[in-house]
Image (tube, rainbow, N blue to C red; front, side, top):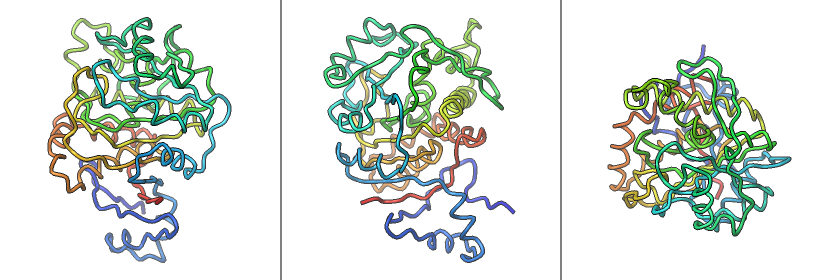
Length: 335
């Protein structure tokens, strides 16, 4: 009989942090009052591994990638957020340089679907240059020359995902995300960066309207959960497309309640937490949400309000339903 380790409607905050040199699931088993010997094999098979370090340095970023044990091969696309000009919380190119160099990667982005300097390629390139990316990396705006369609299975809203056409030029994907709040999605992490982040301008509108972009009121009358479910659906198409040639890293620093797509985001109210990485984007985002709730930082209140107000956890729930990953995980401290 399958064991249910969490309720579907709220974060699970009792995962214990475990040292990588001595993995011991006993604390979780005692918590759940399960006989260890009978269930040890199940526990090891069912949980996704999420690696954690409190050290937020370029060296730690490379180390956590290595510890995942999946070497990305061929042409590697490193998906980042280039940051809307005016904002200052986005991950800086100097911070990620060692990692991008290590995987011989190309930094990739896509244009936005809302007014701003990243909506069209000409101004987006200027913003990318101003933020220092072109000085350090090869950079590619993947939808600059159009888009391609990826099919979506078992969806409620979207049948296809429109992504930058240059995605087909890469063999592997490294999703490097700044975990923070989001004014529409509640929070943004691996799933958002994999879905809306890789979507073309048309694809972003397609997701935001839950497939109703052609309707006059599609953008303004889309139910919140339909938008969140559409993000999960889009993410599922990317994971299916790249299969085992993808991994995910979330950086929990400068944790504002606003996204890096905001040109005037609010200053962070809580302290930095660390870097997390996984082969499973669902487990990764769930772990980040759990760390916010578990934090003893009083500044977390605004972010929790933002996440709950927008029902942000529902993206994680829907991605798990679609088989993108699991909400059950081991948090492994690699330091």
